[in-house]
Length: 389
Image 1 (cartoon, one colour):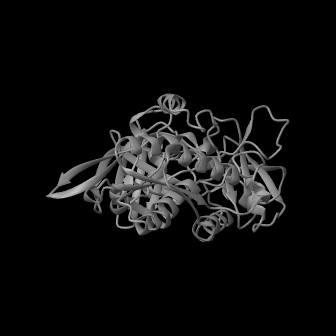
Image 2: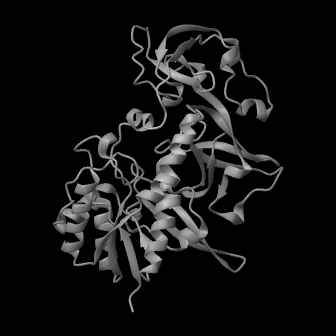
Image 3: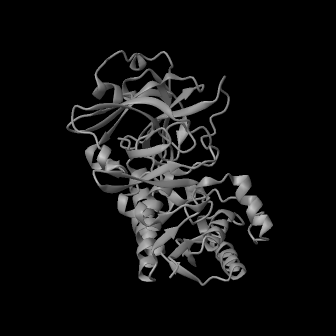
C-alpha cells in the first residue's frame, strides 16, 4: 500500500509541483485547499483572491487526477492568527502571521484534518528540507534550509515541533524556483506562469491599515524626530539586560515634526505610509509608544536608533526544533541567526539565563522588532527560534 499524503494545494505553482512530484514518487496524493478568510473588504482586488486560488487548486487536482476538497478553517484562523495579530499590534509589537499560520493552522488544524483522512503525511510547497539523525537511539527530525538561497523558507517553519516535522514533507526543498517553474511548464500545469502571492498566509494581499482598523481605531498622536546625536544612543554597557532593552526614547532629544493616525499602525524600520517628506534624508520609524500614542522617527538609514546588537527572548517564547540541543542556564554557544525572512544569517552568541535567552550579534542589527521571530541556525539547519521581547 502506498503511503497517503495530503498536499496543501494553495492554487500556486509551488504546491502544484509538490503534488506532482509526490505522485511521481508513488504516494497516494490528496489535494486540499484551505480557506482561511471570508472578509474581502480588506483584500486588494485582483491580488490572489481566495476564490481564484481555490479554482486553480481544483484545476491542478483534475490535471493530476487526484481527489480534491476544500476545508474552511476561517474560524480557527481568526481565533489563532487574526485575533493574535490585533492584540500584538495594540501592544505596539509586530507579529509574523506566516510563522504562526504554519505552527497553528497548516501543521496543526490542517494536519489533524489530514490524519482523519488516513494520511501518513502532509506536504506543502515550502522551500525547505527535512532530514533525520539519531541521538541516543532516538530519531530526531531536522529542518534544513531550502537549496534555493533566494527562496529558502525555513524561517517560516521555525516554530514547528518534532511531532509536526515527523509528519511533514517538503518535496521542492531540493529545487530552485526556476526548476519548479520548468517542471510545471513541462507538465503543462495550469499554474506554471502564475505569479507568486505576496499576502498573508493563504489569504492574499491585504491592506494592513484597513485590516487593523477593523478593531484598532485611528487615534491621532505626535510624530517626534529623534536627533541622531541624542545621548540615549551612547550604549557602552557590557550588561546584556541593558543592551537588549529598546532605546528609552522618551528620554531622547526630540522635536515634533508631524501627526500620525495611531501608534499601533506602525512598526520599527518602517519608512512608507507616514508622508514625512521635506527632509534631507528618508525618515524611518525607530520606536513606537502605544501607551502615550507617540511615534519616534530618525532621519537616514544610518540613524543609530535603527540599530542594536542584542535581543532577549523570555523562556515562555523560546522554542527548540532540536530539543536535544536546548541550552541550559549559564550556557553559551555560537550560532548564526536572522531576525526576519530573507535576512542574511549573522554570526552571534547565544547566552542562556534563568529568565530566557539572549542573542548577542557580532555586529549591530537593523530594526530589531518586538513581536518578530528570531531564528538560529548551525550551518543550514534551523535549531530554534523565539519571539523577540
